[in-house]
Image (cartoon, rainbow, N blue to C red; front, side, top):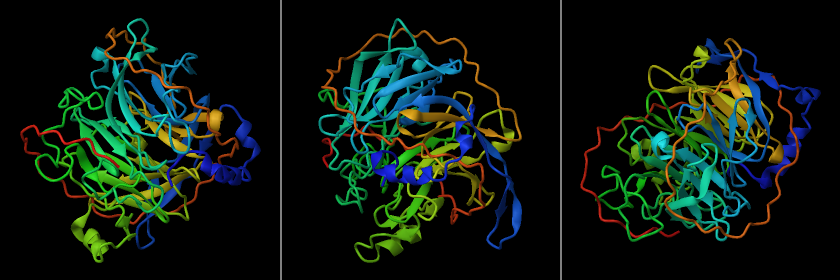
Length: 493
């Protein structure tokens, strides 16, 4: 099961039993204790830094993405599952949404506004991209919008242009991550489209986008006659000119919930929600030329899930797939939320730590890559609330979200050993691009119910090894440019 949504209300209520009176203190600050890391022999190998969470904004509604525009304004943009994008600036959330497409967005099960990314040249063109599930049929829609000419804090709702669409055969596993890589291409995560065990067998099928990471060039258009496909295919995508859809960059994922690029190295982290037992983090080095198979549904983490045909699990575990760098089982949680590698300036002792969490239990881990390429992971804090997403501001400082209906909260991750400055954004930019296309709104749906329990975090962390580290995948050679491909028909479920 993926993160989010009302089916986990029972888990929220269970966590509520653990609540204490400290939850009502404002501002909220939760600190972990000093933690020891051990090697396989049980010998002490040092300490990970102590962390704390500092409340930044409250009263949010089901946030799914926290990001920045890279425009020098210092603004933080918060995408809400319900279809609004909010702006946090100068210590408060602006009362008018940057964009409100709630009438277009389905809000049942795991549907909603799931992704947001800003064009690398946003300062010049004002373009940004959203990923949402369409209200009438649940189809995944990736669309481009543009900031208004009159106000940099308000987007033009009539500027929509569809980038691509993907029909969804089920009501969940939509993925929804959007991220621009260091190559300037847009990466799109799409889940396998089904509840349990990859029922449509999509993750290993290279003739569908389901269960894949896509990579497209949004500065071109290889499909001028198709209003639902406004992008070009990078000529060095791994399946250009060979069997498989040209847009596919990597495959074998179940439900990638929050993926991120390391702003310092260009490495790509993909957190994939597991099925019955194992949650995992996959890693793609910056030198990769794509084509990785992350194993689902033959494998779940480092473990056999579906040995079909017989012998597949052995093949995948012995070089036939790219194995995760980190995993944890359902004794510690039930649904992973991927984060970022810390590259900020405020807390040097957090440098290079990859943060991730579990949605159901609120456990927060930090992982460090060792000199031999393996990863070691340490529990840093048991927050005790549902964590739906992490975020990164322009300076590389990290945030996370307590997902709690319309009482959701944004926190900043801080080191207890370092300063905890409050961002002081500069003035907003004033790009003045013009709209390009009009998207006709669909009727406003009835809102679905959301969790209302208010679980409380705890400041007590435990020493819990969380992974069976494996070597980092060996980088492939530099990609060889290929001629631009002949477009494939749009894939169907």
